[in-house]
Amino acid sequence: MQRLLVALLAAFDATIAAAVGLVALLAPLTLLWTLAFGITADWGALWPLTGTLWEFGHGVPLAVTIPDELLVALAIPAEGAAFAVTVTPLAFLLFTLFFAARSGGRAATAGTWLLGALSGTAVFALISAAVALTSGLAAVQTPFVLAVLFPAAVYFVGAVCGGVRIAWEDGDGGLLDRLHDWLDSHQEWAPVPAAIVRGAAFVLVAMVGASALTLAVATAFRGGEMAALFQAARVDALGATVLTLAQLAYLPTLIVWTASWLAGPGFAVGAGTAVSPAGIQLGVVPGIPVFGLLPENSSMWMLIVILVPVAAGAVAAWAVRSRLVWEGTPLRLPQRAVIAFGIAVVSAGFAGLAAELANGSMGPGRLAVVGPAVLPLVLSLGLEVLIGATILLLSPRNRDELAEERTDRWIAEMTEFDADGVPVQQPSSAAPDAPR
Image (cartoon, rainbow, N blue to C red; front, side):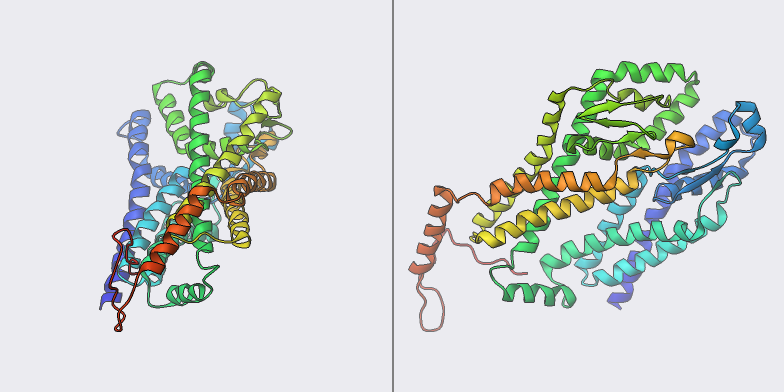
């Protein structure tokens, strides 16, 4: 009965996640639709537009075909009539990911994290299929299979990550417990996986924070250029609102671009262009207001920003090393080397996945190449994080660490037990192991 209840609650969570995401799109679109076309407008295209944008927000590529009459009216060349849009507005994807993680965590607390993840994913896939079947547009097409698989995959990844995080700490009575016991049987290597995950989380949080701060500084210094592009677009208040909402949806995507700039490879805003600390090569840039934040020139002093990922790796290694010393498990050199390498690999892997979602095509012609390149970002960020993590993890232990280790050893030796195994003397500083 409990497993059935958990499955039903997980399915309900998935339904709420999909509904909130769709309503978050449908509500402002309805208001804008009313202001633009009035109460008597044709509402038949509102839901298809909402469903298509929701799918696009989960990584589903769009195939855009401009009607012939619009080509003539806007004087668009015939070769620009059909193009793909694949740069994902990551705000919608992140919402689904975090909502699914919360649902997976609740299922893990009930002891059935895998069942909860599968149940929620199945319902989310059914909702995605229903949206794909009912939201077709003549000018914008999405592949049906991808429209079902991509949103469901996002939900599944979030639910599994949230569930595993809780089940690894509290136990699940199944696969994770057996894996945990196997790691515990190799005492010298048991803390390594958790240390890698913890360190990678520190790196990712540090890089997101540094990228967001860099983007904010760019907005403060180049906000005038951004406002000028708003004015050059010659849109009314309604058009300005649409542009602003679209740019807010792309804010996490812009943070990924900024992280690639901090790591060194930079990003492109069209074929043959490059924006990186080493140099800037721009041609004709689309008049999207947010592109006003692009720097006009570069200098060799900007290369100092590549120290940010190195610092992120160093901070992550310091946090991991401090935690290991506090827990009384100072590892030997091979284990610490594996932790440093693992932090770099996991961090670079997540950065590569984010870059894959944040690059692609935004239009015809030169705009078919936009965003950061995946492989250069993975290699550069991984190497920079590895340098910072290695410096902190492989450096000799200082006197404070050695003194703390000697103190712990002295406390263990001074603790005596009677014949029944009950401690006679228990120092106040020693804390019992927390039950799993």
